[in-house]
Image 1 (cartoon, one colour):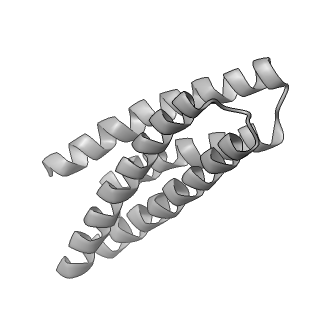
Image 2 (cartoon, one colour):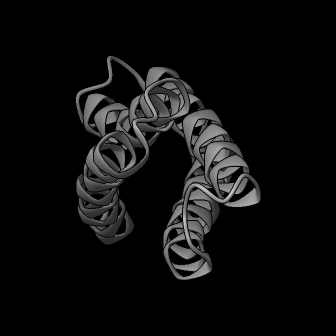
Length: 118
């Protein structure tokens, strides 16, 4: 379960970064639509990991992680779009993208492990 603890910590830290990105986009660019999308998807990852902690069954646990995986993938999309439209710098993009893809990889591994145990 130590992977879960790392995933929990990294997803929380990522959510904090996403919230700060949201605030930056609103203040610097007056951007509300895409910033709300990335906020929703990026913070949902950690929330779903937390939900999975108290899942009703192993199947429910895997399902919640799978939804978290989908949210992580959506977050990567929004980050790529923000970068492509020059709303975030290359430095911000690379850092956030690295964290998001790291979460994606960890979630893929967790989902695969859970599916093997079902």
